[in-house]
Image 1 (tube, rainbow, N blue to C red):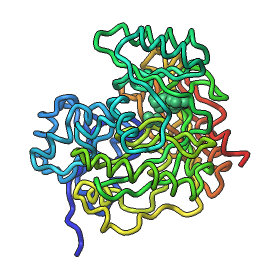
Image 2 (image 1 turned 180 degrees about the horizontal axis):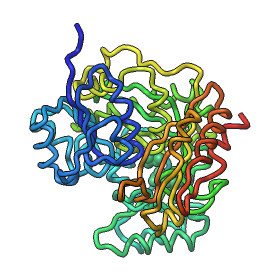
Image 3 (image 1 turned 60 degrees about the horizontal axis):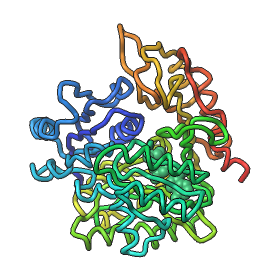
Image 4 (image 1 turned 30 degrees about the vertical axis):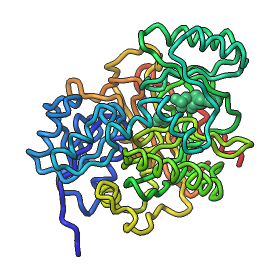
Length: 425
Ligand code: AMP
Ligand code: GLY
């Protein structure tokens, strides 16, 4: 039986959504592809929907119904945490992404930590506080290094890895300025980090290729945390044995736990991991694809993304069969950001060199871009993700940097050491 074609709607406007849209466009199932709101980079693969407010769930649902959308793919966490998937389902739409209740795995660190504790899923030891005095006393008693996290969504900015007790106390006082704030204080875990994303329909879980991203702004993993300055996949540190351990001890128990708690989780489950001497442990869960992990994982998928996502939405992932990846290929991604990011930065800088980067065999996924007077200009902190594939990771990195070298805008900044942990391996 050949599957009927359908219209697909992607929600979001970043590099992650560009990569998802690019891949969905190649699906046998895909008839019309809409991206809401999208960015200029996606125009080649999709129709941009700019007259609907992406934060208005009812308006998004109306658009999907009016345009006979057969699958809604939600990119970012905010609409998931705000219940967009619930509203889609209530309107009879198929959706890739967890419900509001299930999205708490990312939306509330306290929820995630309590769930992991209850179901023996390996993670850092922790305490939750809603009182600054008690949190301070706990930190003084435990000592540093220690990690202080704000409870809610904070776009990567709510975490302080404190080297000293004073730093931890300052972080606690910083978070506790808002009434009702909750803090998670947790054990510092030593090790290398990796991201393992998985497809799930609430029952079955299928890990993707493992990735590593670079969260800090400066080379050598120094400076402030960002959304992610680059990534590569597969991450050699995640051996087949470690992926298996993660699936059995973390991903499968988490999905089973969510089902048992009456909030089955479907969509993409992103496990941020620390590989410690004591085994793989969870740093955080995200309820959506990673950015920029998606820009390296999705190009390595040698399968039909829309079919997989539909199986996740339908609860039929167990019957899907094996998901195929490009054998023996690696992908590298270098993010080009605006000067000043993750702090304040200027916009509207003219971007040049994209055709030359394509010429070198790179893909360029756009994030913070827009069109101004017919020119492509910067419009955000992370502007572009330059991606290259090769059988050899070092060569993929070199190719990606070749593309980066062609691209320019005033104040363009990028890290020069993407994949530095993997290359010596
Ligand atoms: P999160 O937003 O929870 O992923 O935290 C952001 C970053 O802080 C992580 O990618 C880690 O580099 C670091 N981090 C978070 N929790 C811990 C921990 N318990 N031990 C060591 N580093 C951590
Ligand atoms: N790259 C980190 C994230 O997507 O949360």
